Length: 106
View 1 (cartoon, rainbow, N blue to C red):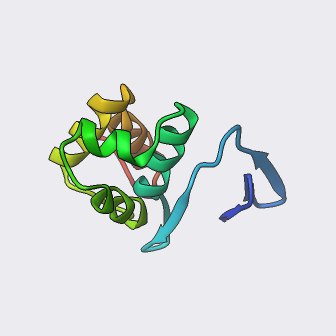
View 2 (cartoon, rainbow, N blue to C red):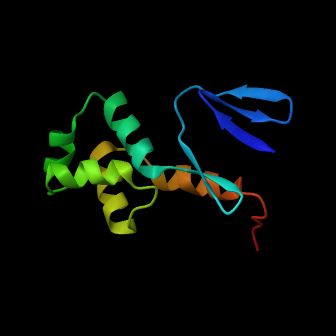
View 3 (cartoon, one colour):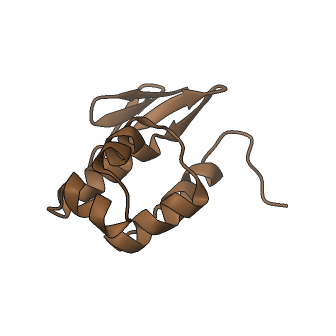
């Protein structure tokens, strides 16, 4: 069983440390990335702030704070955030999906 704790994941008796804070939320017995928290992490790692991101994607900063709280966002908004930050969150989400229990490519 996979269990998130602090800066790593327990898999059975093994602890796997994570290099950065990867935020996971449990949905239907699967752990998935919390996209809002991940966007906030990348924004901070790049040295940008909420005002900067809001200006890049043409929205109010309150919308950015609300986005940080959400575990899912629309594709259009995520595309704008990817372009602004130069970071491919779609790839991270795809990798997360492929690691999901019961996922199989057809």
